[in-house]
Amino acid sequence: MTIDFVVDGPVATITLNRPEKKNAMLFAMRERLAALCEEIDDNPEIRAVVLTGAGSDFCAGADIAEMGMGGLNGSFFRTRHMHKLICALARVQKPLICATRGVAVGMGFTMALASDVVIASETARFSQIQKKIALPPDAGAVWFLTRYLGIARAKDLVFSARMVGAEEALALGLVARVVPDESLLAEAQALAREYAQAPTIALALAKRMFDVAPTLTLDEFMNLEGSMVPLAVQAGDFKEGTTAFKEKRPARFTGN
Image 1 (tube, rainbow, N blue to C red):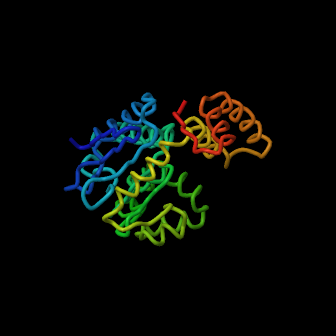
Image 2: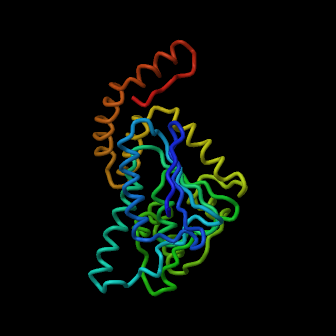
Image 3: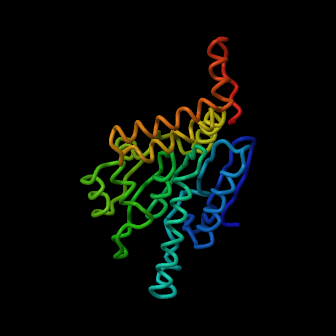
C-alpha cells in the first residue's frame, strides 16, 4: 500500500506511505489520491480531511524514476494526470489540512499549497526544486505561489530552488502554524475535528469564494456572494446556528 486511507468518525486521514522514498509520488499514487478526493466529496459523513506523509518526510515530489518514460507523449500524459490530482485536492468540498514534516518539494510542495491549511512541524522544509533537474515548476506551482507571495517572492523561490524552513514558511504565510514534530499529526487531527463540527456547507461555499476572489472585481464578487449566502440560509445548519444563538448554547451542526 502506497497510500493509506482511514476514516475516524467525521475525519478522514490520508497518508502517503513510501517512507523509504520520502513519499515520492508514483503515477499510481496520483491516481489513487485523486480518486480519494472524489470519494471524500461523495461521503457526507466525512466533514474534514488530513493529508500527511509516513516517516520523516511529507513528499519528495514526483518519483524521478518515472520521469521521461514514454517520450513526449508519456510526459504529456503524466502531466495531465498530475494536474488532475492538484485540481482534485484544491476542489475538495471539505476542509483539507496538510500536515508536513521533513521535505515537501516539487509536487509535494504544491500539494501542500493546494490544501486549505498547512501545519508544519519544526523539521519541515519546502522547495520548488525543479531547476536542479532542468525543469520549470510543475503541478501549478507558479499559480499557487504567486497567489500566496506575489510575483517577486515567488520568482525568488523558483529561480533559487532554495529550501525554506518551517519558520520562514510561517513568516511568508505559506503555513498556518509550526508545531513540534512529535505533535504534528495530533495537532492536525485536532484541527480537523474542530472543522468537522462546523457547518460543512457554509465552509464549502467559503472555499469557493476564496478560489475566485482574486480574479473578480468587487461587483462580480458581490454578485457571486449574493447567490451563495441565500443558499446557505436554506441549509439546516443555518437554522440550528441561529436557534443556538438565540438560546445562548453551542450550536450542534450536522453538515446539512
